[in-house]
Length: 499
Image (cartoon, rainbow, N blue to C red):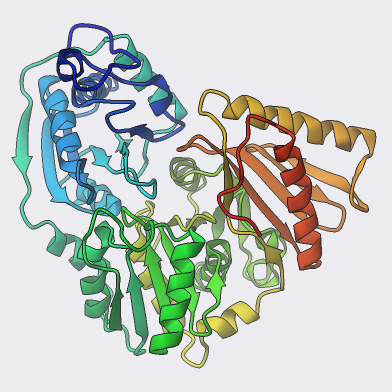
């Protein structure tokens, strides 16, 4: 590992087996993501581990780290190569084995270990691999740490040290489950469908929800890393439509859908309604604001505008901060503001204070929803949603745009919107009343309808969300405006799903 990593090495060669390949674009805003074999090889992962260990030493972090891996055919070998690099840099690695990402985050607290490197590609399709990293619980890496790690890796500046080693942590799941159930079982009996898309959560979620006291119906919980039914992603409409069908079939109170590494939760209610996660977050914020006076909440810029105008939150003295999309961004903002909870439209929920430890955990989120229902025994989830002001919103949609170009393309789109606002141009019959550039561009029209365009942090894509408090037609009008701009740009592909 003495040579600089290469951007590309042809497979089935001696060089591929002996030299490090690390494509620079894999170092993203807060996670690392590569196509395994095409953009990074095992020797490259070893170099990454040595670089992470070097970064830990340079930051004065005690040289111990928790690792684990999700259920993909290659994740264990990725973890082993990463661990070998960490050990070579003098890091004591505590391996908890197959796990969900939040289990690895919790292990930092349970094992008193300062750092984490969870091997997972999260909701990305098979072929992707990645690492979620942190050196200060419950936070994970942000842009500064990722840039330092990138510089060390690509410039081969890692330093090898003695003192590293491996500790296998057997049977960690019972310790994690005890943490989740510390408040005891539910008194309200709920019939719950647990949908896991054959991903990692299938090994753990059904047991937890049964121990909570729910009647559990398992849906695609058998581990199968080919993901034969749908990609385990609760923002993917194929998954949520399957969830809605299951609710109708079984007459369940709620269906929880977990993503590939168990840190995101999607929800379908008893009527088969797909409830976007930002709306579930608003219900949880209402519930929590009754329990914690003057609570502070953080939501991402993809989320519904209802948080800012919600009467229940105002009556309870709660305040809401809109912030950058991304689990690391929201976690850090939550920590900085000492907020009670943070919510992302993607289904990452971050519960702190009396409700959690401040990181994203899909099972903690599902349990919080069950406890919310328990505190309102005469209400259903559907009735709670019906009590919210009506808005019409899109799912999170994305269109392909190369990693090397997506930020430039997104900024060019932003410049067009800013120029339109300055010139007083209208989108349909409405002027652009407000522009927010916390993350990409969110432009709000004078009727309250809005659209968001931002570069994806984890994939070669542009992300789009639209919402209107007026009508479905008003929402579609904004989407059609954005879509026309995209179609006119040869660097942007078609949407993966549309409204």
